[in-house]
Length: 248
Ligand SMILES: Nc1ncnc2c1ncn2[C@@H]1O[C@H](COP(=O)(O)OP(=O)(O)O)[C@@H](O)[C@H]1O
Ligand SMILES: O=c1ccn([C@@H]2O[C@H](COP(=O)(O)O)[C@@H](O)[C@H]2O)c(=O)[nH]1
Image 1 (cartoon, rainbow, N blue to C red):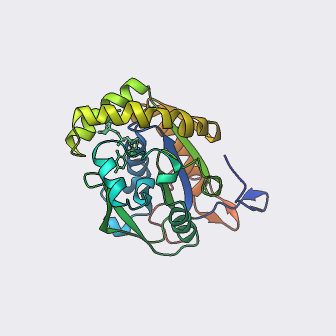
Image 2 (cartoon, protein in one colour):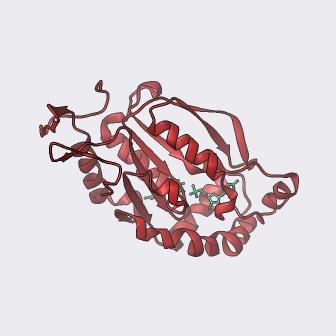
């Protein structure tokens, strides 16, 4: 656990709100699926969107806009979306800083079919827990240091490739040929150069992603324990307590 941003009160760490969790891992490792499971298990399934106390933000919302020449390359599967330079680091850091400061923030939505940000997006209101997921969320030092917990989803590369092929054909409008060309020439080398080395920053490594229910249960228990309401500066330990949706 990274306690750098958590001053101690009465011998206990004061737990920051929002509690910001970084979730890294290779493409199609299951980052989004793990985040959804954590969100569900924190009691947020079925809660109306605007009332939720847990939010999932994707790093992909912060891809830079492409020039016409880059866009043409992207359509041929020849633009490197897996290189750190593809992301708008300043916008990403500012958004997370504003969220950490309790501001309401507009997060763009990314359109994978057209390789660009969409006009619509989501408003993130003050919440208890932020799950910030993406292939390179641990790569940028300033961003990495804003996370109170860091998870790395570690799924076998063959499994990831087969899931990516299916997903990109079904959801992202790609052809098998272009997916494989992009994967072998850009995605895989960038994973090895930029993403995999960031695994060392993780507090918890989750083998097999969303299939690893034991790891997810333990992480959820830990978050619930950390975020239980305080009494007189001391955290209470009632098993039935749940933190989400409570005024604080
Ligand atoms: N445990 C799993 N078993 C089967 N399919 C999965 C599993 N986890 C994820 N997937 C599928 O693989 C694809 C990528 O998963 P996702 O969670 O979006 O990964 P990431 O966010 O890391 O790209 C999605 O189509 C998802 O439905
Ligand atoms: O326009 C785009 C933007 C991104 N990609 C690929 O997406 C993955 C990151 O998303 P995951 O959900 O983590 O898989 C990255 O590997 C990019 O190559 C894209 O192909 N086109």
